[in-house]
Amino acid sequence: MRTFTAENSDNTPDSIPRLIDSILALQSDPPVEPGTPGYNRYPTQKDHWLGWLGHTPGTGSFERETPPNRGARYVYNHIGEPKMLLWLIEAAGVDAGVVEAAERASLQARTLAGKCKAIRQLVPFSVVAGKLWSSSGV
Image 1 (spheres, rainbow, N blue to C red):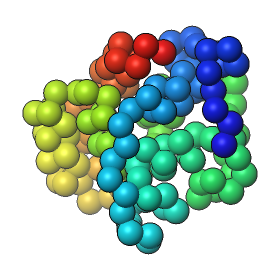
Image 2 (tube, one colour):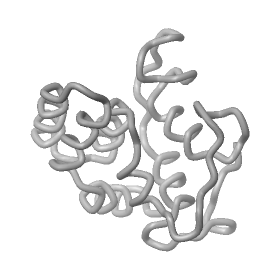
Image 3 (cartoon, rainbow, N blue to C red):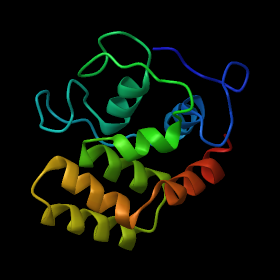
């Protein structure tokens, strides 16, 4: 996977390379057994995020292209796995009570999309970005 650094990334507030750098700086979640639902081929949600965002073919569930003008906000608002969102908001340092409320709200929805929507309603990208950008120094 390509690693983005200050020298080779677009560090605009909404850039995907900046999101990758921020995720790289976060503490990983404990690894799970292969085949655990919600983890795709990855042992952790941190790896899931980095694999999903990476440009290496075959790292995600399907091939992706990042169209112009679609940055970190777009990615956050289109993730379809609630475990990914919950890990990111918790690892970024969002208040534990808010994380718990988002998890409880997600449990009320029936579909993955509904679960993700419930999480994002309580923790919009602006909250996560504020935590990520201030804590990672990126």
